[in-house]
Amino acid sequence: MVKKFVLAFLCFATYVVSAQNGSVSPYSLFGVGELRHARTIDNQSMGGLGMYTDSIHIHLNNPAALGKLALTSFSTAFSHRELRLETNAAKQTSSVTTLEYLAVALPVKFQRAGFGFGLKPYSAIGYSLLNETTDSQGNQVTSTYTGDGGLNQVFLSTGFRLMQYLHVGATVNYYFGNLEKSRLQETENVIFGTVDQRRSDLDGFDFNFGMTYTPEFGKYNLFTSVRVNTQANITSENEQQIGSVVAGSLRPIEISDVDLDAENLRYTDIKIPTTTSIGLGFGEDKHWFIGAEYSFQKYSEFVNTFLKEDNTEYQDASSYALGGYFVPDYSSIDSFFNRVTYRAGVRLDNTGLIVNDKPIENFGITFGLGVPIGSNFSNLNLGFEIGRRGTQMNDLVRESYFKFSVGLAFNARWFLKRQIN
Image (tube, rainbow, N blue to C red; front, side, top):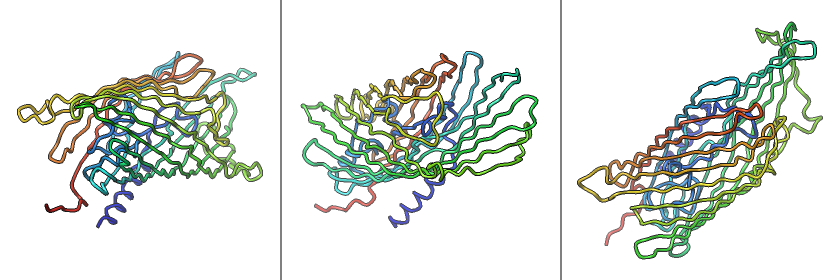
């Protein structure tokens, strides 16, 4: 029964993630797309903190949390984003709805060892850009850039309690997906346009290691966390076609396959550098918590030789997050709202991407609710984020966004061995 459940879960998850278009951002043009950095809704609502762990929630970033797991847990979430895109010359609105993650975690030994598995989007490409210039004869040249696809991760994690307060864990991530990019150029008073189409089919692995140390001081806890996500080594199998089309109708005239083998570009390597995160927090169990986290990545070492873009550089990336939660009285009988978890946070990301000599940064304010449902500490998580990414300087785009997320965290006592005293 367990094998059938796992197989059905992964088949459904793969279908849902593969069918969605997870981005409408012009910045998904670069690298391997817009990075999702999937976290559960409860973590997202605290500024994206990846350090807080407990015994009833799945944790997508820190496998050490599985060493605390007390119940079998299933978690899934969807999000909807509204975006306003602004340049110095125009404004546009757009929206996108996506699956955030699907995950299952099971305790092997009550609050001593556990394992988890699931699927989550890692990056997404989804853009359509128009650039108009004038050639030396005064004719208007229109270039249209479009992209689609993305990378997903299937993951398997395990975590253990080594000693009191000290937990460690490891995750293996398998990447799969494809990236498609196209450039169409049409010139005024010219019958034919030119097209350049590229596709990369990707797969690869990386590992994520986590450690938490949460000593008690009376009724209070100190939270410390270290996570290292190793360099992802991804193999890219590439295709490229160039040719001519009829301007306006885009009817193909002559499309030819580029001999990438002669250029040693049929198979290339994509390297996504190691990310290290350090977190520190303090709180009272089931009542309140506040913490901060710093992450850094040598994104200057990012490599994608086949799908590189002009006017683009990469520098080392970093991220700062501050957040926490408050529960008035988790055991309250008289007031439902006293049992609700209230979360909030802020984050600042230096993405490591430089376009037209301008670093691209992201700033977000987050907040959310954890609403208890049923028994076994199951809950409905609602998350909100208001943020801004990019700039209008140097002919770039500034994105202002509002994100609303809904997640279900369902807990049960499946697979636990019955004990009789």
